[in-house]
Image 1: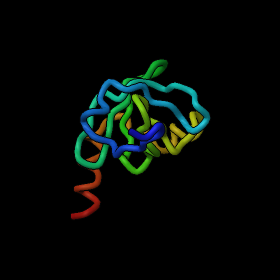
Image 2: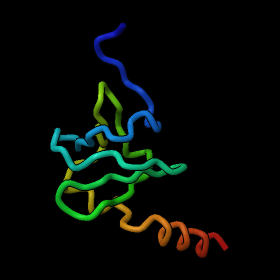
Image 3: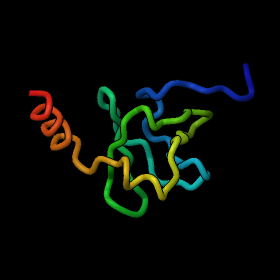
Image 4: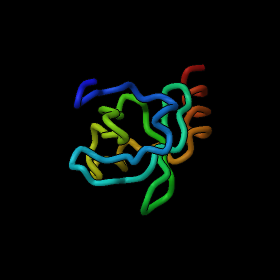
Length: 91
């Protein structure tokens, strides 16, 4: 067994705490859907992020490739509304 192992983001990580790049906990991994994951936020409303922003899953924690200050620029408050907008843009 390796002491430090990095895993892909998958359903086994649901319930793990989510930390930003600076090791600040922002919430708990609540759900994964196709290319996105939902964070049950500690302070504000829950939000979705693209899987691209899950930097690493190590041990029993998820580390983002973003800082807390960057989250508002990338967080998706409502995934259904976001996907509907993408569908309209693609048409």
